[in-house]
Image (cartoon, rainbow, N blue to C red; front, side):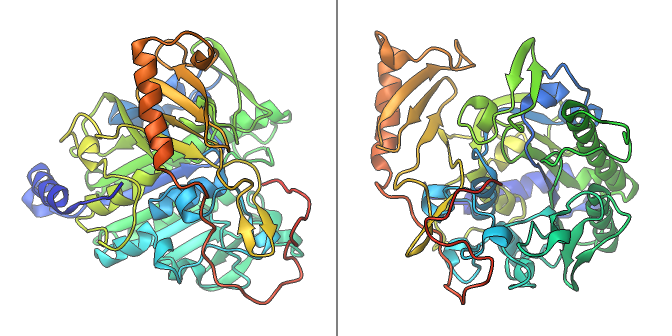
Length: 475
């Protein structure tokens, strides 16, 4: 689908001007927080029973909570989708590929196809920063990769760089990259370091419109004790401690915005890149839910998605509007009063009108998620596991599972069967089920038979580069 934003941007500009006092008429700051491996079963405002997340709950109570927001099933597909506004079948990052560890491919800014939301927001006059986890470039080879992707400033864990053991550390003594280079921050806990850096950027640029990307390392494995709960020992104890530390960082950022007088003109969006670590089980609304990272079940791809900005985003709203990660780029550009270039192909649509209370629905008829497991190499470079990746597509009621042979083999009525236990394809279909199958089959038929490959420029081999047909690796 194509995104046309001119009319919406003009309408939103008027709406924003009316919402903010004349002396404070600024384009909104955008703080996008992406937790790493955290499903709804660990967020108490979504019904989680084994933990309390008061800061996230407060954001939801004072803002908008989405029930039908899709990420992709795994790290790389989610991150590239949100940065580019395109589905993995279009941008080529269909499966996970850990560039610092495996080499060869990388997220290459030289192709317009890979234009990021940060570059577009810079064009709209925003200052931009990122902290946390990147992992789709190797900073040893491209130390200014973040700048080339549109960020003025950054402090990123490098990802594990093969042959460089200190780089494995994202928590205690984190190994990070900044505009000045990479190195270990001894005695620091990574999550505190990332939040501190973000708050420092806010202080320096408080009078400018800001795009703040906080790609949290938490609560991804390794499961560790946090500074607040150093005695946590078991995997479950440490997971809970890490989730509570996620909540703490969200609270720190909201408090910093309050202290700087920026709260009422900063839109905070909190979500996660995929479901929880599979070895961890939580409880949501009385049901035990195993972590579903890498899975296409709702627990793996339907994420917490909370939006908050006092005076801009209506308070106490719960919405069933459909959205997925391809919508983030056009939404952020829309909020910034910018425009997606006509020659940039984008799959998502702006949901800014929903966020700002100007519309009740996103207008999306379906959302999609695809991308699980590690990518592979052949003689041409990085590619997906299959020519056509298996995927899921859903609307507000029905969901289908599509095989790598481009066939629908599962249909679920999520209104009646939210845990996807009854496959309706195997039974007698009523009129509504048949209509749903026809609708989703038309979507499947519109997709190319072969997913794209990621676009990047070949370069000289490195000692750590993975070789074609090498064994599978894990994130």
